[in-house]
Every structure is written in structure tokens, then in C-alpha cells.
Amino acid sequence: MAAGKIDPISQFEVVKVLDLNLFGLDVSLTNSALFMLFAAVLIAGFFAMTASRGQMVPNRLQSVGEMSYEFIAGTIRSTAGEDGLKFFPFVFTLFFFIFFANLIGMVPYFFTTTSHIIVTGVLAIAVFVIVTLVGIIKNGAGFLRLFVPSGVPWPILPILVPIEIISYLARPVTLSLRLFANMLAGHIMLKLLVSFAAAMATYSVGTAFLAPLPFALAIAITALEFLVAFLQAYVFAILTCVYLSDALHPGHH
Amino acid sequence: MQDDLNSRIAKARSAHDKRTGKDQPDRGASAVGAALQFSMSFVAAVGIGALIGHTIDNFAHTGPWGLLIFMMFGMAAGFLSIIRAAQKMSLPPVDTPPEKSDTPDTTTTTDTTTTGTKTTDTQP
Image (cartoon, rainbow over all chains, first blue to last red; front, side, top):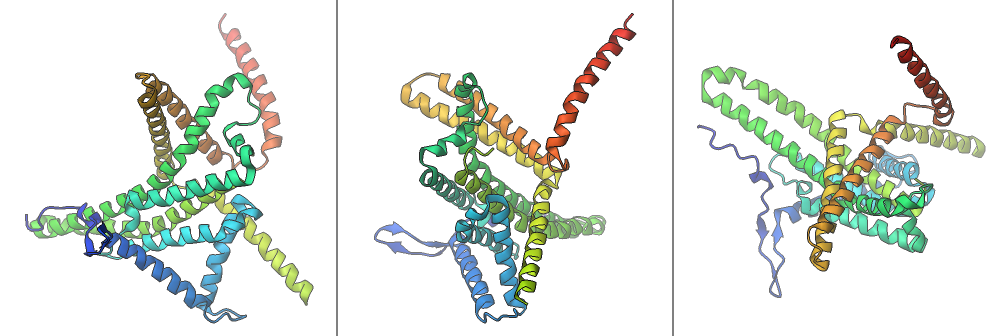
């Protein structure tokens, strides 16, 4: 074994970068937190750059900023309606945080924060809590109509209401699991394929000729992963919009 | 000049809406992704149901019954979410659901009657 043990999991290890201790509380900066900060700084810097000139006729950078605004606004408008635009800042932040975190993870040796269930879970729980609060504040007790589908005979309701409540509670689980699983699986696959190619290239002359095969596959999957990075951020944002729409207009489905 | 600009904005906006509207049904493009999502939502629903049942059992000391009943509810919720997702996926290709949904009803009923008579015809 020239290439050593193939270890696709160690890339997800959280390690302390900077030891910090605040009144006996361990608030050390980990690589996960560092790359989250990096994503936030990158997003803030990018949009500050796009908005710095504010020209009537936008240059390239400014039009990218305007396009991203229009993209999210259009997504919200088409899923949650015109009154969903009040939550534009939330959805915009969510989409670009996930998108940039996914893209940063595509850089070799960089840490993918969204490949940890704790990160995606907190994001999903934030969406869940905000959607529930918005629904209760907007509709009061009328929000409970979400759990009572219209046009259902009353004898079925004792069975159907727990089912609806369970599927409502399952939302944050699937929301966080989808993003987490996609990022984790993609990065494990990339690491496996590339280390497999390296192992084949160094094992013997015969296998070295076949080594380009997994390497070509790894290149193809890298391209796919860029698509997944965008798609998962988009799915997260659009599902947030759908849930917001449910909270704003319960009893519509 | 102002009217021209407004009409152009309106045109661009309607084109944009159409585009985003068209984009939406295309979400489940990859069948593997859809399958993964269905299985995941089913497992999540069963898990949530089991969790609720277990919590109720813990507090009320009702043996395995809360877990059993709520896991059943969870499975039902999982199936419901799969059916809803499948409906959402299969709906968009049909352009005018209300018109088409009227005619198939009658055709299917006539179909069943004709097939029924056919089988009775072939039996003797």
C-alpha cells in the first residue's frame, strides 16, 4: 500500500483552530466556524462590491448583484405570493449562505460547513421556528387549519390530524437531511474516486493504465457537485418559501 | 417615453414570471434525486412518529402502545407526503386539469363497463 489507507471521512473532522475560553465556557474557533465566518465575509464583501457604485446603467458586477436580487425575489413571488416578499432578507441570506458555503467546500482542502448535520439542522430549525411563529402571529388560532385539510368528513379527522402534525414536524428533518446528505455524499465520493485513482496509479504498471478512469469520473462528479451546490441552496430556499406560503395562507391546499 | 418604459417593464416582468413558473415543475428532473427525496421523507415521518410515541410512553407509562400507534401514524404521514410529492411531479405536464379531469371520469367509467362486458363475452 503506497498511497496508505483511503480515509474519506477525515475531511469532515472538526478541529480547533484557535483556543478561546470565555468565563470557563469553551468558545474555541473551530475550522467549521472559521469557514462559516469566511462565507459570511465573502458574501458581505461581494454584495458590498456590487452595490458600491450604484450606477443607473449597471456594470457587470452590479448586474450580477441585481440579477441575484431579482432571482430570489422572483422565486419568493412565484411560490409565496406578493406578501411573501416581506421575508426577502431571510430567504436571500439563507440562499446565499448555503450557496457560498457549498461553493467554498468545493475548493480542495477547504472545509464544507454544510456537510455537518448540526449546521443544516440549525438552519432548518430556524426556518421551522420562524414559519411557525409567522403562522401563529398572522392567523392566530386559524393557523391550526393547516392541520385540518378542507373537505374531509369528520370521522376521519382524529386519524388525519396526527398525520398532518407529524408531516409538519418532519419538515425540518427532511430539510436539513437533504442538504447534509447531498454535500456529505458528494465529498465522500470525490475523495474516494481521487484516492482510488492515486492508489491505482502507484500500485503497478497494469493498474496505472486504468487509473485515468476513476480520475475522469472524479472530474465529471466535480462538475456535478457544482450543480448540486447551487441546486441544494435553491431547494432549501424554495422550500422555505413554500413553508412561508403555508404559514401566510393556511388551509389553501 | 414613460409609458414605453412601463410597458417594457411589464413585458419583462411577465416573461420573467413565465420563466420562473416554467422552472418550477422542472424541479424533479433527476429521478434518482426524487427517489432519494421520497425515501428520505418517508423515513423522517416514521422517525418523527416513533419519537412522539416514545415520548408519550415515557410520560404516561403506556407501555409500547404509544410507540406502536404513533409509528403507524408516522407511516401514514410518510405515505401521504410521498403521494403529495408524486402528485406535484405528475401534475405539471397536464395543461388544463379542470377540463381534462371531467372527461376522464366518464371515459374511465365507460371503459370499465366495456371491459366488464368484454370479459363476460369471452367467458361463455
